[in-house]
Amino acid sequence: MMIGGVLIKPDLITFVTNNGAGWMTMIYGIFPAILINCSSSVLPVLWQVEKFFKRVIPDMLSTVFMPFLTMFVMVPLSVCALAPIGTLLGYGIGVILFVFGGVSGIVTILTCAIISVIWDSLVMTSIHVILVSLALTQMISVRYDSCVLVSAGIA
Image (cartoon, rainbow, N blue to C red; front, side, top):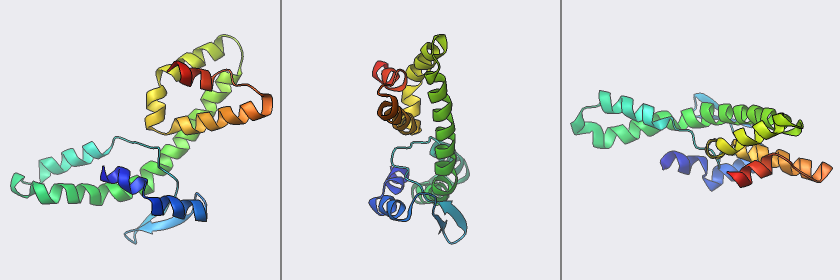
């Protein structure tokens, strides 16, 4: 919950909005971070870090040190690495799926089926935001979307 709280903290979102996405800052004064709006991202990495600390920290000290050390590692990891990687990966996947959805025939039908099946995963990784943005852009320019919004409705 804390990682989610860090990623959707209103001050961070306002800072990103005012300065523009892609602005650089430093975490702990050491790690460079490209600021982006991560308010719709969920990347399940924390459990691996927590699992490591459960194994390393003795049970007697785990109540205090395991959450602290997990967050100490995960906050910079999330802000510096996972969020920018997720955004770039999401944009790439979104563009590829959108291009395949724009081709007519069986390719569009298969793309719609794929998007419908993986829609929950797209939402968890915030790729759906990119797909919906592209679909709305297409609706403005050519007045219809035959793939993304249909797939989202099916899902």
